[in-house]
Picture 1 (cartoon, rainbow, N blue to C red):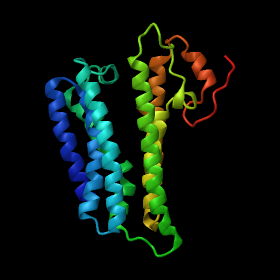
Picture 2: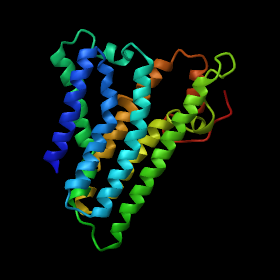
Picture 3: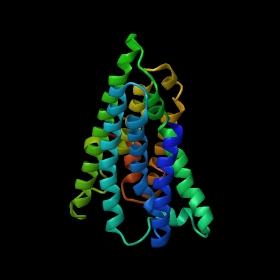
Length: 256
């Protein structure tokens, strides 16, 4: 399972790297994130020897999540003819070898680490004890997380479509009134649910570092914190930070 998963991820990252470097768009790496994780889940469903219902439930959940994310990433890349400034700043002055290592190899390793629960679940049998119910519970958590992420992204899109003169300076309604990053929170729940599904089998419980890594990436590495750094100078954003929880949801304070 591990070898097949690594082969699938390597193929996707290598293909993306070739296209990205030829086009001068290192941000194409974002487009490979969802497909790489879906490839691991499908590999587990097809080649794994564990419980078939769990293997295919995970494959369906991850593939559905990845398809929506892929649609969003492709639209974002297509809307701009210039590379995402995050990549330009991060990779300034780097040679091709350094870019491949810092972006594509690193992302591939993260995909393999984050997907460890899926790999273990694909190779493990379900116990006959009550612990087996962690599997459907985890799939339900994944569905809730995917729904939160999709709804948050939809609310953000609708906000962006409003006329600049009519819309508020900051989106602070709906899910964005409970968390400043509900899309990343939903994403995190998807991978918490994947771990819970795998934890129905004893070996799966030991993969807890995988969702912990994903949450760390979403909160502090590539997600929420970096977004906040870009938003600091937007009018009203500092007030928004004082009123609304950073990541985990909390009711909006009415105090300015």
